[in-house]
Image (cartoon, rainbow, N blue to C red; front, side, top):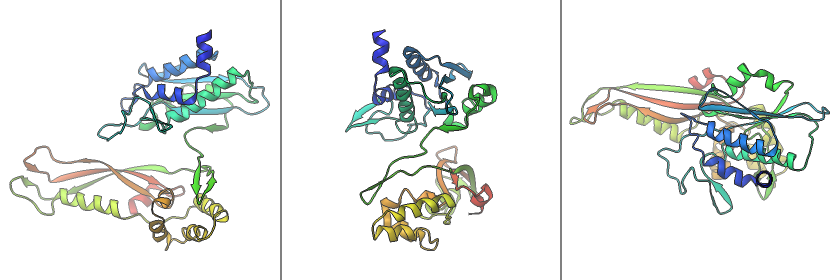
Length: 330
């Protein structure tokens, strides 16, 4: 009993360290060990979670905490999988959960094992302090968020929809965070989100033998595309949510920041102001443009053969109210 009580009182940072130490890189995911660890924590505290999944290696977790019925149910959910750390230069090992400088470092610390750790800590505190919430709380840990959700959210909502009965509101990844500007603290709250548009661009050119260089071939064409993506922005779009955000900031910023941020809403000046703001404007840049990031490149099979075709894979993110056709056109 004492061991269970000690685990209930663990801090979010300690919980996060443990979660990071499970390598849940997706693909392949293999989230079950991490999800089972979360289940054990909850069971030790007196909860009764269930684990469900399409395959043994990719399990999800759901637990419902009964409320008084005075408020509607609330869903708190997060994902246990993380993106790859391969071919990246880390100052600390990505799966050790190192604490350095007052921060927990590791793959998933932000996206989103940190969020899971906070949710878990909140649930454990509910039990520790014998608090009954006004409405039911449904806590879900899903797999496969980083690669389509087929084994996670899609599976749960299609095969076990009854577990989410009565849910109207949910809290998950991000949604709100702290923003510091001009020595002031703001709390932006997400009310809409970009959607993905993955693209493949294939360029062709003259191939040949590596001993006879080809000018202007497929590799060169791909390089020019990558250079444009690196140095140019797609067109500016002032969407209603971003307009609301910037107008609220402007009302609470001192001069000259107030003027600079107000000019972000003038499409013919937006990019100029972002350039002037530099690093301070980095947060606002993707809010005002569709974006494309080159993430993979494929071409060539042999060292001594110049390829006649190169394919770029682009991760596109489209602003709310715009569609895939807009991205392709841009």
